Amino acid sequence: MALASGPSLATGTTRVVQAAPDVLAEWVRFGGALIVTVWLTGVVITRTSHGSRWPQLLGFGVGGAVFLYTTTPASTALAQHLGDAVYGCALAWLAVEVCRSQGVRLRPGFPVSDTEQRRRTWMVTSLSYLICVVSGFLTAQITAGLWALGVDDALVVGLEQRSSIGVVTVADGVLAFVTTVVIEDVVIVAAVVTLLAAGRRPAWQIYGVVCLVEIALHSYMGAVALTIALYAAGRVWLYRRYGGVVPVVIGHFVFDLTVLANWLAEAPVPHMLAGGLAVAAVCGAAQLRTPRRGGER
Image (cartoon, rainbow, N blue to C red; front, top):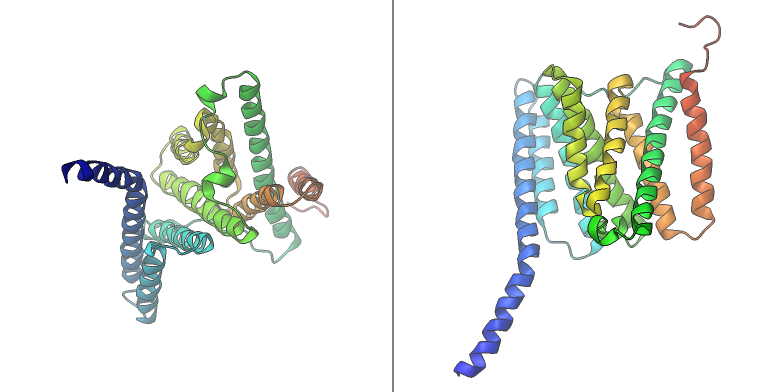
């Protein structure tokens, strides 16, 4: 009996150790969803406590649904990505509500009631896209340079992005990038910049906080993640300079769609798509210096 129990115990221990990261991840997911749900529901109820009770009921219902859905173990990869997207949108909603509770608001975008405002929206969207393009290009070149120097084992130790987020199909990619965009642009950039600016924090602290968070989120890339600081700083500058979180989100999401096309579509379709979008973005960004006609001010 003793001889038979030894290997069995060892095998069981090995399985427990191997399963520990997944169990920990599930508990972190559960805890995060619980905190977001309770916090979001409480903030919404507080804001609507003096008015109709329907917003309160809506807050309870949406919060409960988000909590249940995002903490339920997914049976498929697509369900997992859908749960992440729901959770990301709830987190973005929480960021908006927290800003409102502090007496400040995110700047959503620009009205499109006239030509000038539409041009401004196009310009900011284009700049957001181009910031992602330039940052992605530099990251790719630095990564290739490190590999060429033979230091990949020391510095490029992280996972490839597609495998790290588990993208297999178009639907997987779209949902994964929805999660990425709403968390990075609404929560990490817009909300953090708005709250720190309201607290009269200096610019270097605002840039530093956002860059450090973005680098930490991309740490799976290894030391190359340091290049994400350029990408983060560019979006902070764009939001502080022009505002408009919606154009920033759109530009980022369109860029991510070109990345998805590069992963899943055969050449030359992704390259033609990226080229066409880049030309359109440059034309949009050029509006920054286009003189206005008719004496517009």
